[in-house]
Length: 118
Image (cartoon, rainbow, N blue to C red; front, side, top):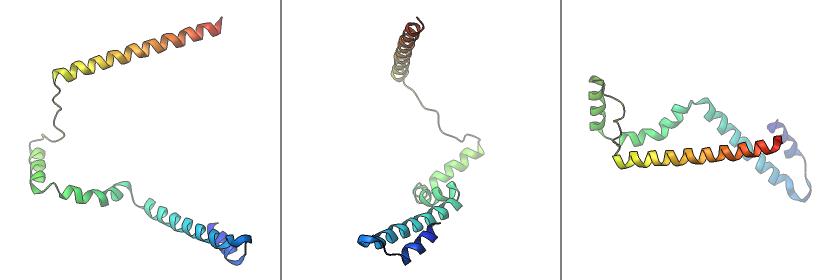
């Protein structure tokens, strides 16, 4: 359809010189469409691999030796996070604040609902 519109525009003259601008925009849309189609043929891992390969290589050979050693001992994966007591307390405080706010919202909505039923 876009190619057909391009053929029509290239043979038709629009008022106020709009033909040239219309053709320019249409050709840009065609190029964008072709590029999107080309990208969609590649899977997501291949697209990310192009970008990620260089940053992974920066880690160096020692990093990969450590990974291989972890695989041999079945100790792979991410190391566990060490959470301090203050962080645990802060987390529980935030959770309790969230629960209180949530309960308050539920009460307000229940009151509104009860008023509507009267």
